[in-house]
Image (tube, helix red, strand yellow):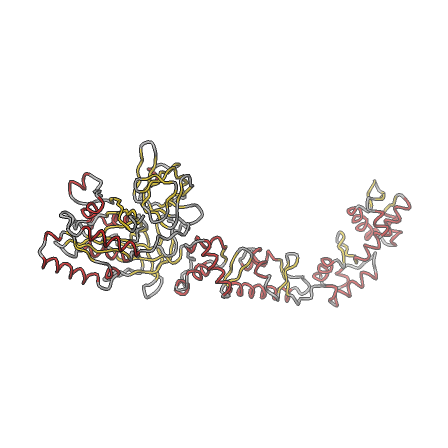
Length: 603
């Protein structure tokens, strides 16, 4: 199916032409019929396109008071039929509707001069000349122009043939497997519940599929699908669709909401955009506007980001499913006129705006990466508004070009990686200078200082040859980490080994406590209840005591003192350690052999 929207000034014959083409009067309400004035959206279908393709028409109101409704009808179409009456020629709403179509990026359509039977040939010719003047230099300048009269039928077949030709040249509706349906009508069907209608874009939907209604991520299930009065199990992009939704009440859905799949869309309230100008209009540097998005109108705050008026930031009053490339129409809430448009560039922009100009001028994939330096591969399609497969290709291209580096399942901008590695090197260098006998910086502590997750920092440092991560400690690759290699460390170990069971305290030996702690960490020394022994002394004591207790059956502290030739001050910490190890076991004031005594005696 193809969907075509009408556009044009009030009472120029839009609804009459739709009726002539389809046999269906798009005016649905009694008030519309009695006043001869379209107030809200109307819908009709016919087989018109190439190979009798079904074409759906969205007929929009032309009165200035109902521009809001007009925008709801054209927000998701890519073909338009602009109607200009020969009796009045180009009018204010002809101009505004044309500008709206341009802002929304509608590039395909035709212009129909209606009511031709009501004027003479000279007036008809003047209307066509005036029309050509107004569309010159716009997207509509290349559109074919057809003259007709809907009531007499003159030229209607030519309209039909021209529209068929236009539709044949329009590219197929994009299918990104990311469906979105902007709701333009909601009602409760007897015996069926909530029904929403709209033009489906960017993907397909199926019966029994779970969906979200945004804003608010309200869950629903598609109970049935109807398109062109036919029940379908699936429906593709580019179709006028009615969805019967289960799990949500019709009073909780309104025009401007969107039906999407879970997990596929960002739903921002803040977006960065490129400004689309309207001739004769100037946007203020900041202020309140009405932003028309999809089929809805939303209050918004606008702020320019550059002096040239090319980039801006918009804060919406609700969170909507948006992606780069989406178009918005901006209207003044006071003058009720269209003052500009916007194309979405970033759906989750950083709060800092100082570098927005440089960031937003980059290609899509670089723009997305730069705004969030740590980027999970599966998040890219959602943020960029592309198919997952295309997202993978774009990210791989960034890696190939050296713009990004792959770290596990994430990508990091290469410049950010280099900055992070440089900051880590500086922190580690400063730590080594202040604590030369320390192994290095704790990974978690370093990550906290650098404001990055520890897992991410570990991944970032894997390619950094100047740093080594060992046992959750980061050190310089050339850092001499062994205190036993330090002259002061070797000297103290020598003192301990010379007095194995009566070692002097570090304070008495005049050694830096940092060296002592480093020796203990390395295993060259052991700290037993505040007494520091050489590790070799504990090994020797373990063997001696184990052999003695196995030979004698029991040992007292005095017996151990004799075995080691030491005093109670040094013997008690050793005995307590052997109790903890299972070499000995305390029984009253005596020690007996523990489960590890035999192994210790043999060692």
